Amino acid sequence: MMNQPGNLRKHPRVDKLCFTIIKSFDERGESNVSHYGRTLNLSEGGMLLDVSRGVPFVINVNVSLGLGDDVVNIKGEVVHLRKNEVGDTELGIKFVDTPEDQLELIRSIL
Image 1 (cartoon, rainbow, N blue to C red):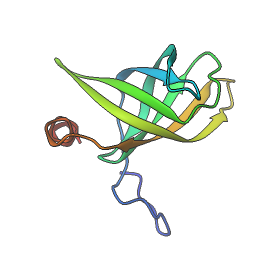
Image 2: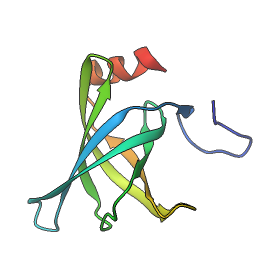
Image 3: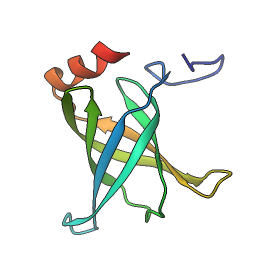
């Protein structure tokens, strides 16, 4: 687990590798583009996602998260965006209005 002293996250993050697709939306709320990546860590409240190609900073995304034989579909907000040491983009995504059945699937792998 990744919760450290002084960490203000509501839910602890767990190192977890899941293949993920995010669909971003422009300022008018129209679907912009899809990005493929992998989670670096995951919690009930959000995730850190690594994508190999640049992603414009957008606020609202739809996340499709592969969990074994299941796919979780969640709305999210990008709360931070940064380049890592190898030049890939990392996105911190906070889950928004997550249905309980989708949360149960996430909890089952944490």
